Amino acid sequence: MSHFFFDQLATFNPYYARFAPDATTPLINLTAAIDATFFTLWIGNNDVLGYALAGGASDSLTPPAMFSQLYGMILNACILNQDGAYDDAKGAVANIPDVLSIPYVTYMSTQVPYNGMVLTQEQAAGLNTLYQMYGHPEITFEAGQNAWVVENSDGTWGRMTANDLLLLSLPTDSMKCHGMGVANPAIPAPFPIPHKYILDAAEIADIRNHIDQYNATIHDLATMHNLALVDLNQVLEEAKTGIIVDGIEFTSTFIQGNVFSTDGIHLCPLGNALVAWYFIEAINATYGASIPQVNVTDYNGVQFP
Image (cartoon, rainbow, N blue to C red; front, side, top):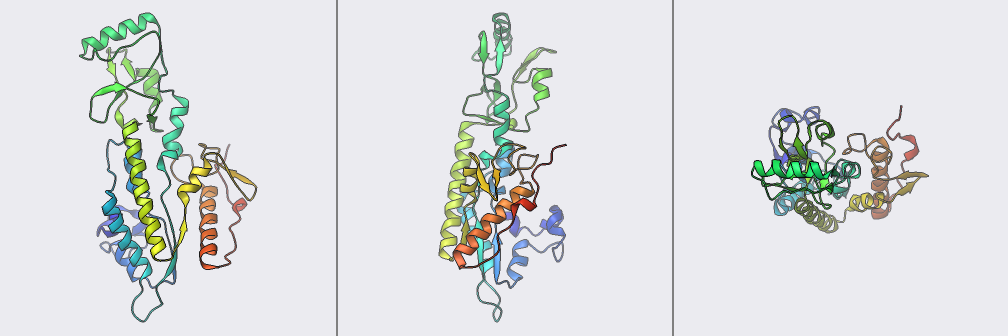
């Protein structure tokens, strides 16, 4: 949200720089200067996404009160027109999907079980001795399955739980070749998984709490201004089990789900077409319009070689 008001945005964001009138005009000024009759607004994802993608190790969640204030200012800039121009603009706004349902956050935990460390009795005994040597007798191992050793958000060490999520950025080669999550055999020394590759249960709850508050703001302001509201949060929730549009099934499955691109974060062309489909549906329903629906079959998903 705050980037709308940043007077150096054109320097740091090459996409805004393409159409910014100069290097120091904030996006909010440019937005307010446009006398439009209609607008679409889908913003706020990055107020939570950066924190989630960093495993809570960097960036931060925008405080809900600040989000509400800034969103209201951005929305007013979209709606209000200069004196003598058009009446207040109509528009469609979209809420924020649960970023914890994107493949970047969900996929890796389906490939690497939280307790995927399988040890013999001899290996377990050796690790117990090693961890005691390094001052961590509280971390113990046993024959069979063991939870990975991880760095907690406060820098302490602990064990991964079934409620934690491994991120797509997890370097699995470091786990296979250098013992990350257990111990580096070349030294030897304990080697916990750095926290930037994990979202723990507390961070997950915090993220969802912020998204709920952000979406409450978007809902209330859309209702206040009689705008079309596109519930993309609900769309992505339904995509967990599958949505069929124009005979094409959309799911949040990584690579094959027709929603997300190969980075597990951004939408592929088919996914963007799906979003457009829901925008048009909301606009037509709210304003009694008859905009032709997008034909999603005209767009591609992830292409396989």
